[in-house]
Image (cartoon, rainbow, N blue to C red; front, top):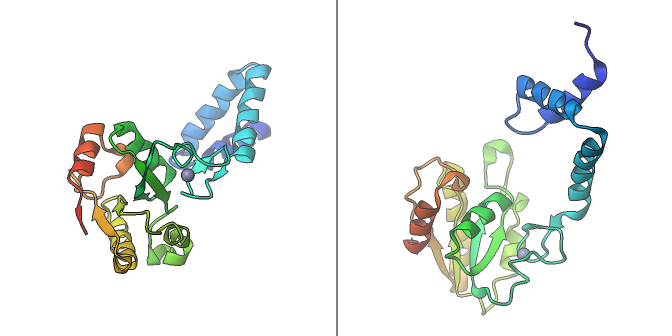
Length: 197
Ligand code: ZN
């Protein structure tokens, strides 16, 4: 079969996404071809719309399409606690538990010298400026991986001298696992059982 250049090009775009191999990318490209023109336009518009509107919340660095994210903007949230997470997906995971009523801070990564991710590449400065006297506790909820633990340790050393209580999630989550894949009960227990760092 002759290669259809525009189909290959489309599949290549899907192939840019994490976890999408050649075969899956090709399957998605064919599926997209099956859409009628209106639906295809909606698909394309959704990509551009999200890219144009979504930016980082200036306070917690989570993704938002509003001026402030819905958590920072919610006056009922407990402003004395900040839960520090690796990425925006982790915020969604903790929010699903519905137990946590504090604020968040999204680091956008973990310290990983082998991958060239040094502390200055994370949103740490943005965290430090938030730590005034109104903040009583910082919960470090990075994933229980080697990098996640090292990052937690690093942040703890930064914050502790400020006299703020620093806690770490008590993981029932297997080491090496990702917060995203923890079930809600496990995450709830981890939040409940958080310990002093
Ligand atoms: Zn925010």
